[in-house]
Image 1 (cartoon, rainbow, N blue to C red):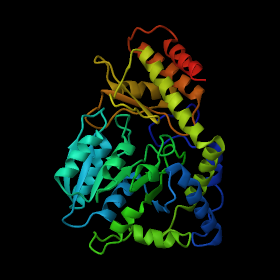
Image 2 (cartoon, rainbow, N blue to C red; image 1 turned 45 degrees about the vertical axis):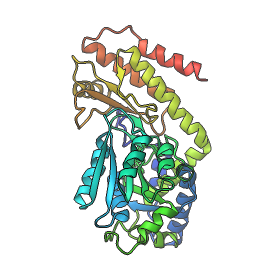
Image 3 (cartoon, rainbow, N blue to C red; image 1 turned 30 degrees about the horizontal axis):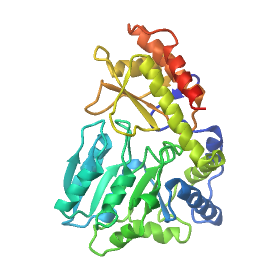
Length: 381
């Protein structure tokens, strides 16, 4: 579509070479061509996850993988500690309740990250099957300290279960080094593919739990079935074969650029967008030690409505950003900084945002956002 700019915190714009890969003829999902592609996808995604573990693939969204993570680890009568510091922590809790799991919540003010010491105190007080946390909370632009949480749980029976749907590929993940037992993600964010492909990676500690006889029964979401199929370079059920081909192409792009360079680009450009937004009179939402490299959240001035800004960005400029569909509705706007984006992307975002805010009566020095962003980018070279 002409003049349509997808700048959401996911799904994100899909690069042309990935679209071309997805458009290749569909092959037999049990045939040698797809087996080779699936094995290649696993080999390419392991360094991005920071793991030597097997990687499991499912046809689903990120929420499907969140449910899969819980249904595979918790048995009746066992308790989960779920960290809630944003919308997707709340979603984890809702899924756990639907599954009938026993849960305790560790609620953290939105915009802040959980303190590993708080988790350490809770696991001293009670026995938990798992501590569940969102790595990159895209509703608030807050990144969790997985290294710190992993250190707390490394010698504890509780698993560390992590949603990195909006983080993987744009925020560093070192699953093995950090002691992350279960990490789930999906294709439609920093991995630069359309929605529809989910993935999971489990530690040996997690597999010991998953393979118990007393865990909750599962058919489609069974990690055991998925692993048995991956041993044959297949998926347990019909795979989104075209998306696996697209993922291989996207991962080729990541490795060609170099994963450290990809992560640095995400950090540099998200910082530039934040600097530009501050120059336009916006304040960042979030007070955590580490803010996201893949989504920037701005607090909307009291006299404005975030939904109006989102609407004007689309109607006037074809730029699709996000508001919030939760307790922050109207108070926050969010812009995706993930995937195949560059300096021009960020500067265009700021030019459109300046025009919209000026049109709403804000007094802004013309070009202030661009100048601030360029200053940061120049200093970081």
